[in-house]
Image: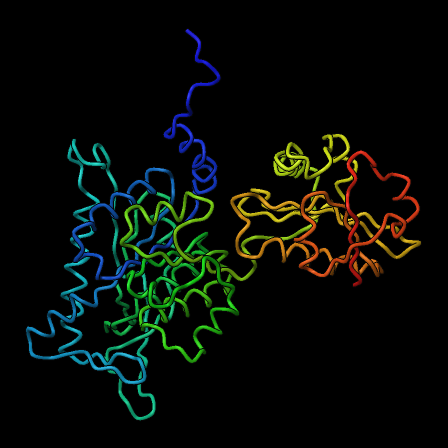
Amino acid sequence: MSTSSTSPRDPFVDWVRQVTPYIHAHRGKTFVIAIGGEALTDARFPDLVHDIAMLHGLGIRLVLVHGARPQIEARLAERGAELRYVNGLRITDDTALACVKEAAGVVRVEIEALLSLGLANSPMAGVRIPVVSGNFVTARPIGVLDGVDYAHTGTVRRVDRHTLRALLDQGAVALMPPLGYSPTGEVFNLSAADVARSTAEALQADKLVFLLEDAEVRTAALPATLLTGEVDALLGGDTPLPEGLGKCLRASAEACRHGIPRVHLVGRSGDGALLRELFTRDGSGTLVSAEPFEELRAARIDDVAGILELLRPLEERGILVRRSRERLETEIERFVVAERDGLITACAALYPYAEEAMAELACVAVHTQYRAGGRGDRLLEYMERLARTQGIAQLFVLTTQTAHWFQERGFAPAGREALPMARQALYNFQRNSKVFIKRL
């Protein structure tokens, strides 16, 4: 019995089809994921661990870096002591170091236990995940700064990437505490953000992910994307950032400058936030990169299908003139596209008339799901810059339904006679398009 073409779509099937490209893209890649010690005190932490286990099951090579701040502070409180901070850096005395060692050991065992869960009624039924921890980080002391001795607080000197790669090649998950070791046998208390960044750089990981406390994320109101320069501006701004978030932002920018293509800052408490960030186009957190995540570039022949899909709804509504695949293929060098993770989110075309120093701006389209955030304005600015490089003095458009949008951006109404003669000859009187011109 055949299924009617009008049957309602199955949301589950649609979801699987949407995430499949990400499954293929992530398989075999190396992700470093940093988790604060606060996560372990959350009743939903097992769900997060199950999501991480699923990443391993999808063929992603995983390094987990964990913090232990609340566990350390609890042990210090039991001893009537506390961590001291000077200029934002921790001072780790002998008592504090003992608490750091205890807390790191407990956190490691708890994470290992959750990754070992294999009950039949759990999301990890039948799963066997080898978890390995060790002395992967060589550290050195911060030493004495401005007369302050930071004792056992250290910084990463190097990460044993060869051993880590060998373990990942064998299918293990590497678990790394915020501890480092010196050739002289000393142990140092490290920043988990520093360990995660250094590990990602040493492995040249494909992604570095920081799972943050939601209170910090809400306080900063981070945008969906940040370039490294924008991170620097945030860190140097007048508005103070939560300490943990500041460290992760600083580590994110440094990682991007040292070759990590994408760093993700994700509020961890949302159910499935990590999965949404990694397996949906718009994610659930903030993406930090050295280059723009959504690229504006010259169109290529393999973009034709995406452009056709973008233009079709506007053509059906009569906003744009219908273009065939063949015509698009022959005119593809005229087009500029915005691409977001393989999806063409916007396009426009430029048709120059050199004798009149004019050019037609055509096929301006933005995907319905991406019309917020000023994408149309950025596309127009890009096309205007492109026109100027070609010696174009005036840009014109012919439109039937979007006149106000262009007028609000400096285009003035004009008659058909203002068009280049060659374009006047092609004017479609049946469409009766209005003409608007902008001087560049």
